[in-house]
Each structure stands twice: as structure tokens, then as C-alpha cells.
Amino acid sequence: MSIRPLLLAIVIASASAFPSLAQESDLVGRLVGVWVGEGTVRPRGFDAPEKIRCKVKGERMADFQVRFAGRCATTSGAAAFRLRVAQDQAGQVFAAKIRLSSTEADVDFKGPRTGEGMVLAQIEPLEQGARLLASEILLMLPLNGDIRMTNDVTDQNSGEQAQSLDIRFVRQK
Image (cartoon, rainbow, N blue to C red; front, side, top):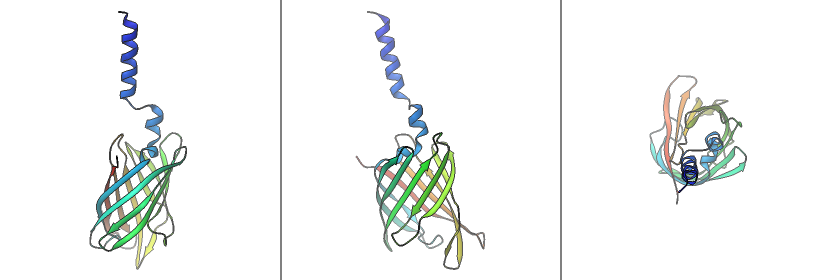
């Protein structure tokens, strides 16, 4: 038996065991699929925490651009959820638009890649009652794994901080 076919088989097997460069750089592509999520939320940033459950679908809109949309429900109600994320071709800078219900406007975020995730900082603070809130979202997208999304809010007037969202999404089979 020639060693050449054996070497070829080893090279093919090892290549499929590691992510390709394109797969590594297309971080937002990992959102594609149907996901179910559970966690906790503080609906207005500083309210008492409530349980949250979501079902969302991630669809590719264009190269390096994904829409992650569906519905979420808490003990106090249900709402539409939409996250649109785009990244540069190098996979290092991200821009996102988030809409938490059909009655609210999109909120713009931007930020860098951090390992297998991204840190998205809100571009303009939002008025929420008497508070002026700024958010920072950490979206972790491990290769072939679950998705974890946290949102930390800061009251720009008082400096008070809270984690307003912590949810883990599992891909539906």
C-alpha cells in the first residue's frame, strides 16, 4: 500500500477538524439557525429581574450580515425581538441594530471582536423615564456552541449600573 493515499486521508481529516479561515472570520454567520433561549431580564434596566424565554431565527441577509429575529416572553408580557448584525470582511468590527418591540425604534451599536464574540456599545444613550441609559452587549458565539448574550446598562446621570439581560440560546435540531 502506498503512503500517498494515507497522507491524503490524514490531511483531509485534519482539515475538516479545524475551522476554515472564512468560517473563523464570519462570526455573525454563527447566528444562522433556529434558537431557543432562556435567562433573566430587567425590562427597564433596573427593574426586578424576570425570567425570559425566546425563540428566534437567524437568517443570512448578505455576506457578513445576519438578522436574528423572533419573540421573547417574560412574566410581564411578550414582545418581538430583532438583532441585525454586520461585520467588516476581516471579522474585527461589528455594527448592530436592535429592536425590542414593534413600537420601539432601532437602537444602534458598534464594537470590536473579542475572542469568539463581540462587545457592542450603544452609540447614543436612550431616555427611559427619568433615566438616560447606555448599554453594552456582550454576544458570545463559540464555534459549534450555544450563544450567550448579556446586556449591561449604565444610567448616564447617576452612574448606577446593572445587568439587564443574561440569556443563553441553544440551537434547535
